[in-house]
Each structure stands twice: as structure tokens, then as C-alpha cells.
Amino acid sequence: MLFEPVIGLEVHAQLKTKTKIFCNCPTTFGAPPNANTCPVCTGMPGVLPVLNRMAVTFAIKSALATDCIIARESRFDRKNYFYPDLPKGYQITQYAFPIAEHGHLVVEPEGAAPKRIGITRIHMEEDAGKLIHDPGRGKSMVDLNRTGVPLVEIVSEPDMRSAEEAGAYLRKLHAILKYIDICDGNMEEGSFRCDANISLRPVGQEAFGTRTELKNLNSFKHVEKAIRHEIQRQTYVLEEGGKIIQETRLWDPTKNVTRSMRGKEDAHDYRYFPDPDLVPLIVDEAWIEAVKKEMPELPDIRKQRFIKDYQLSEYDAAVLTGSRQLADYYETAAANPKDKKQVANWIMGPVLGLVKSQGLAIEAIPVPAPGLSELLLLVEAGKLNAGTAKTVFEEMITSDKGPLAIMKEKGLEQVSDQSELEDIVMSVIETNPEEHNAYSNGKTKLFSFFMGQIMKKTKGKADPKVVTELLKQKL
Image (cartoon, rainbow, N blue to C red):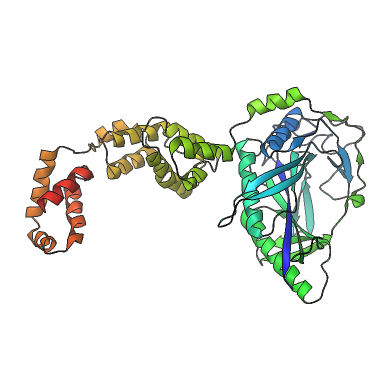
């Protein structure tokens, strides 16, 4: 029997507020254990939560960016369960009345047609703390710094049918949340993490099969690997006549397997009820309109504009709009040069090569976008060729000097004078008679040899176009 996977993702994104969702404790990552805590977020008796307005604004942004309908009234509930990193014994979250519903994203899995993935809901909630296990002491310690940090949980429809589609959806959502600057997207620190719900059903069957949930996947690669493995595991169980158990499973990246964690809870297990300390949240039209004015241009729209305004290919535009910072860098660098494609090539080549080799953030690139723009203007003006431009670029990485100053200091200005280059060309031909003779007898690949010799003689400063024409004439 052939089975079809049915996949839905629940993404938890930590919001970039300075303080927690219901108190004034800071949300900074890496503070000493339990330093960012107070009686409110540690659940002391008699304390009252106060909702963080900025967290709501960020949640509205996430809804606008994913085409969701924003609820004019939403409410907070208590989700009751006991775990050592949940000091109150319940989590404040939105259940019956979330802040947003019925959105979607259009994703483009590699090698496949675009696909629309529905978003069921977006709701706000507080994060739990973190347990640190010490096998050497046989004990676990709890750090409550993360307790009360604001989250949005973005729940997809079960519209994905492969690990590739799930990966494409996750990457798209990650890029959007970073674009609108509400989440730093740091998966290693847990700022963006994912639970995957997976079930199988016979091809052609409408009803869903029994699902399992994979918890806290914190890398795109792990999400795709875990989903592929779980599909294989469930297929094997069903083909052998077994039954899938509704449960929560963990991904073991060292062994590349999923393993059972606990039985999967249903909503009634959490005994949801309205939080009596928090009034309903009212979001009026004026608030939504104010947030709309703050929204940046979203990646898909910006990509299409790059294709139209800068005549870039779809691939180039997709790479350059992959992050807001990179797109901003490109637009600044491309403001003055006429050849927008050349700007794209430089950014996707030397600039991103530098980013990768040194592990830099785009905003930390030592060659600022205006400096790259000035460098490429020198190329367009014929002052530098491709080789000497790269020499100047490499100097700019470690220097505060501009490209013009470096060019003059190192004597790299391109030699374009035809009479001067003609003498050099003839000199190179005359000093290499055997190669000249071989070229004349049909070994045309030696053309590159002569080009190399001329560039060596001019220390890379000769204008390649002029040299090429002269060589064709003289050889």
C-alpha cells in the first residue's frame, strides 16, 4: 500500500522585546542563571501579570506578514501542566481566542512548483524556563531566565506532504520574521524552534492517520532529517501491520533516529480556562493601521521589484533578498553604478565569500556598501579592471581608506593608452617567438598565455579589452 505523509508545523518564535511579556524583567540571552527573574515571572503568590504592549505590536506584525485575519478581541488562558521549568504550574497562552487566524505562505521547494501552505492561527504566550542536566552529579538544575519571555506560536495547516516542503515553509517563515524585525531567528539559542506533526494515510484517503509530534527541532537540517526518518518509521510500522501510537517523540541527531518521549496530550489534558488576572485584549483599527505603516517591504514583493527595477534574474533577486540586511546592502551599493548586474555579482561573489569565510553578519561587513559602490564606479570608469578591483577590495577589508585612495597609493590605475599597450604587446610577442610560431600554426589556446604575460608585465593594470584587440591584430 502507498502512503501519503501529512505534515503540519508549530513554530515558536521569541519576540525581540526588551522585557518579558507580563513583567519588566529583561529578555537578554546569556545572563547568569536566574538573574532575569522577579516575583511575577517566577509565579510568587499575590502577583499580577501586566501585558507588554510591544509584544502585541510584534504579534500584529507577524499576522500582517503572513496574511492572517487579526482578531479585534482575543483572550489569554491558563494551560495547566507540571514541569520543573514552569514555576507557576501553568503557562499563560492564548487558546480559544487567538490574536490571528486564517493566513498563508506561498513556498517554493527546490525543484518543485510553488505551493500555498495555510496558517491556522497565531497566538501569544510566555516561554518556559530551561533545565540543565548534569549527568556527573545525577541532578538537574533549572534556569528561569527564559520564563515569561514573549513568544508567538504560528501553527500551520497540515498542508505539507514532504520534508522538502516543510523545510521550504520553515525557511520562508524564518526569513519573514527576521525581515519584519520581530525575532532574531537564532535557532541555536532557541529563539526560533519548531514542533512537527506527522501522520501517514493511504493515498486517496481523506481522513488523517494517527499523528506523532516531534518536539523542539532547532535547525532546518534537523527538521528535514527528522521528518524523513519519521515517515520511514511510520511506513515500516504500518506495512508490518502495526498501529501508530499518538505520542511525542524526540529527534536524536547523533543517531539520526526519533525516540519516544511521552504519550501525546490532548487539549482537555491541559484543563484550559480563561486567565482571571488578564482582561480581554482589544486591538482596534487605529492600532493595526499604525503597525502597517511600520511594516517593511516583504521579501516576495522586494524580490519582484529587484527583478523589475534592476533587471536581475529570479535567482539573483532571491539570493539578494534572502535577508533584509543583504537587500539593503545591495540597494545602497547599486544606487550609483549603471551595471546593476555587476553589483549583484560582486555581492554574491567576493562579499558573501567574505561573510562565509569569516562568519560575519551582513551588517558587520568591513567593506561598507557605499565603499563597494565607489569601487565599482572606478571599474565602470575604466580606472580599474576586474583583477586590480579585487586587489583594492581585499585592501579595503583591513583598511579604513576608500578605493580611490588605495588605487592611487598602490599605483593600480588601469593602463588603457593604446600606444603604450601596443609597445608592451609587441615586446611580449617578440620575446616568445616559439609560442608565437605555435599560435600561428593553429594552437590558438596560447592566446591566454600571451594575455597572462602582458598582465604580468603590467602588474595586472592593463585594460583587458584593449589588450585583447591588440593581440588579435598583432598575433
